[in-house]
Amino acid sequence: MHNTVIVVGAGPVGLMLAGELRLGGVPVVVVERRAERSGESRGLGFTARATEIFHQRGLLERFGEVETSRQGHFGGIPMDFGVLEGSHFGARGIPQDRTERILEDWANELGATVLRGHELVALREDTDEVIAQVESPDGRRELTGAYLVGCDGGRSIVRGLAGFDFPGTDATREMYLADVVGRGIRPRFIGERVPGGMVMSAPLADDLDRIIVCERGTPHRERRGNPDFAEVADAWQRLTGESLHGAETRWVSAFTDATRQVTEYRRGRVLLAGDAAHTHLPAGGQGLSLGVQDAMNLGWKLAATVRGSAPPDLLDTYHAERHPVGERVLRNTRAQGLLYLSGEEVEPLRAVVGELMTIPDVARRLSGMVSGLDIRYDLGPDTHPLLGRRLADFRLGGTTVAETLHAARGVLIDVGGSGLSEVDEWSDRVDVVTAEPGPDWPADTGAVLLRPDGYVAWAGGSGLAEALHRWFGPPKAAAPSTTRLTERAVAH
Ligand SMILES: Cc1cc2nc3c(=O)[nH]c(=O)nc-3n(C[C@H](O)[C@H](O)[C@H](O)COP(=O)(O)OP(=O)(O)OC[C@H]3O[C@@H](n4cnc5c(N)ncnc54)[C@H](O)[C@@H]3O)c2cc1C
Image (cartoon, rainbow, N blue to C red; front, side):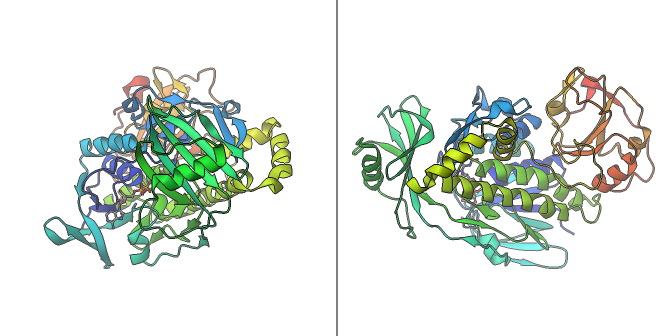
């Protein structure tokens, strides 16, 4: 029986998943068809929840000084993320290539094998293994694994080979982007609606700006390569009156508003994550963040399944939890596209939505939706308000919630030291942190059990043993005495 997981694609999602699987103790091989990293700037940052999960793995520090902003938008209507409780705002101005480099270094340090210049061309599944055929610099070779995860982007080969359905709406328009050198373009961080469309611009570096041009009435066409910059500059000039013709560029590309999602995230031993599972308009910069959260949700579940310690239905909770989250992102990006990119006829609706957004509860709802902070997984009938939600980065004596999650194990936060001895039987999978409640600790909340992805699996009352069983599988056969970790003494 093989215990390796094959990950197809070394984009941000494949690399995040590789690191998560390694933390779960499983061998990982990532196959990536590009011989070198693309260097493309693409997703320029991540949402508040993605910032938080990078922090929970000790990765945020690797980004150095991160520029965060509480200013966001919904369909181009300004929105203040400051209405949300929590320690992070989304990060901006980080080229995707940098994110990928950081994730690849991390995955390598944890022992993942990344095979560049390796393209998946076929796969087949047997009862207890999956076999991938890969074109490599040395010719075709076969790799065998227990599971294979397609993190191979919006045009996923895995999706087609494994027979996933990918319904949705076709592209209705094409939009351009370019990274332009040395023109000092005025920033329009959340974009501007102008007669004929919408334009956006933001600095990427001292002498480099990203522009996005969405011109109404552009037909969508199937492109083989990237557009010429002249096409982009023409459209920019039509909408802004400014000429960028002849400028040096680092990257020119086009994208559409096609919106699709697979109907199932798992078919047997093949799973999908990231853009391979869902594509949508990059409104509000949610795509990369949605994908790395898929990876964080899947990694520990798949690792436990491969190790043989998982409860039987654990892996299926990946689809059950992440499909609705993806569906909601698709809905909000379509709504934002309509609000932002439609013509004059949408102005009354924008005015009404803008007015509604001045109501604090509405602002909180929309900010929570776009930042990913309001995700609540359906973990059963318990009515504790924290159940199924992420736990903010509370201080726990000498440590913090984020620090306790570095090792991607379960964590029982025993606030007040109520001595929950049931957990001793899961000490090989769950750490215990004992701390006095700080002033910001949620009211009426005692102990909390966190899953490795930072979501609350149990919050006080009875039923701790059931929750441990539900998420971490059966207790140890013969439980040696647990090493109780107090405050700072959490092993990383
Ligand atoms: C203009 C634009 C702006 C964006 N802005 C943001 C933003 O601000 N914030 C944000 O969160 N997201 C943003 N996104 C979205 C973000 O770029 C994607 O969601 C993200 O790249 C998805 O990551 P992924 O790992 O799923 O797929 P990808 O990044 O596409 O990676 C897939 C990898 O798989 C490899 N691959 C493909 N086929 C094979 C094969 N057969 N064998 C081996 N390897 C294969 C590819 O070479 C690639 O390296 C933006 C996207 C666009 C286009």
